[in-house]
Image (cartoon, rainbow, N blue to C red; front, side, top):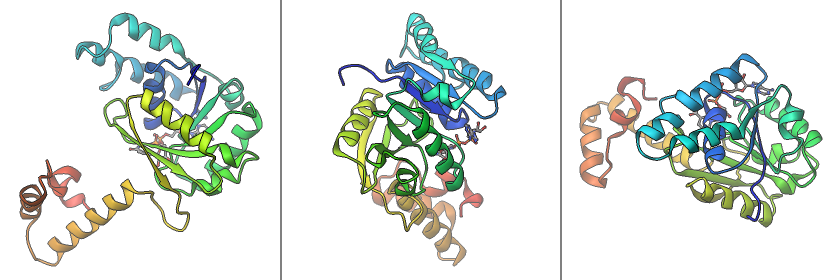
Length: 246
Ligand SMILES: NC(=O)c1ccc[n+]([C@@H]2O[C@H](COP(=O)([O-])OP(=O)(O)OC[C@H]3O[C@@H](n4cnc5c(N)ncnc54)[C@H](O)[C@@H]3O)[C@@H](O)[C@H]2O)c1
């Protein structure tokens, strides 16, 4: 990547805030937009002072105070989606998990972003193929699924629709590596919600609940078996919170 792209982040909730922080820390200029304007001040405060924010990174010796100032200076909250994407080389959509809403956002990003810009979605499981064909640039649309806390978790699940070009995959993978993530490219499978990480996660959750509900063993026994048999650091009930596990 010869020059770092300007990145437009759409949706400054839990994920958009953290993604903006990580990509800005990697050196990109960010334009951050949310449909609820008051959310932008909350996002900026979370980036600076939140539990996984930049000041905590100073406390842990990961960043210097100068790097925090420079990173904050690279993030600009903006009032419209058009402003967020008009100079972008790459955009990140992080609005709620609703296909109609995401398609509308992709249409708007397509209308206002430069023709060469890549459009990414942090959807947890919706069809990237549908988002790609909401635009006139389906070869430049790709899923980039993050895990939170984004500053800590290394996952970069790069979801390739049949229309996504090799060049798009290469550029997004390169930026993900620059953000200190491990990009793994998986195929979009529009018939099924979830890509790979969430499908496997869902299967483990389902089966863990089932063996307990069938009276085969207790939650604590499931946890102990998984640690002893597969060296999992935690069992599923410890990880996902006991009785709420479905
Ligand atoms: N929360 C997680 O752990 C997690 C993990 C991986 C992926 N995801 C995915 O990330 C996406 C965002 O999730 P989240 O947890 O950050 O949700 P969230 O509700 O915290 O944030 C969504 C933000 O989008 C804003 N928004 C709504 N419509 C908008 C629009 N048209 N334009 C601009 N902003 C708009 C909302 O005001 C809100 O601030 C979802 O697709 C979700 O499935 C979430």
